[in-house]
Image 1 (cartoon, rainbow, N blue to C red):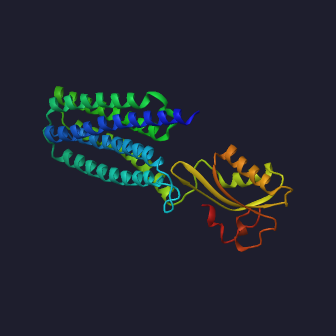
Image 2: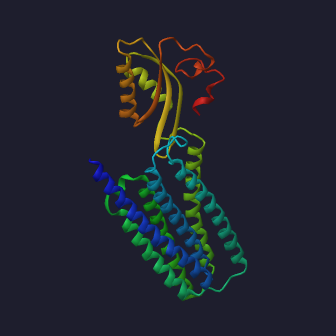
Image 3: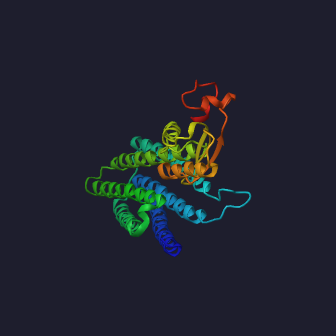
Length: 311
């Protein structure tokens, strides 16, 4: 794949994300206004849900933008962590919004509020159309491979349900005048928001706290290197973490003194790349057996007090 090709694909992703972001942001504002004017809590809850989409799309846009920023002397990994931080802040904001909406819903069970169902219906239908448009924008083209675009599309899909719920509530109020359906639905939508916010918070916090990538099993990695590369006696001092979507590892390997040091190093790097998709590895090769306190981190050795390293 030529650089040119991936570049246009990149710009295509960005253009689609930007369009979806504008559509979603505008309708989120429309739903907030509609919810306040019609007195519908379900619309406000759906607007909260749309805020999750807007934020997800904004983060995807930022990720595309900042991933292109070259690393420099003070930010050697570039700005990839910024999206993780944005995800964390987004998750906290969503949790706060959800609590406020549930609180208001409970209040409304005791003091029912009038709801202008006609206005509510119009805005809910428009919101559904906006979601369909965003979803279509995100699903066209090469975005499937981009984690951010995929996540954003999932957000929008969840949001379609919120809009359908708001339409249903508007129709029920219109035909039966039963207003409690509004807070009931707003709580259901809040549950959806809560689920995605909680997952987002857990994932982003794990990454901010230098947690090991969920997809990589550190113990298995050690065993694999020892079993598959004959010269490797054991592997210790393994540290795994993740920046943006890049897994990074540093490790010490105790090896039989090789005939060709660089070739062995190359094979270890190649193995990590092939089997673990790790492109950024720092490997320290040692010919002597590891004798220090921290050698409890080797496989098969008794665990010392230092086994907190690979949690």
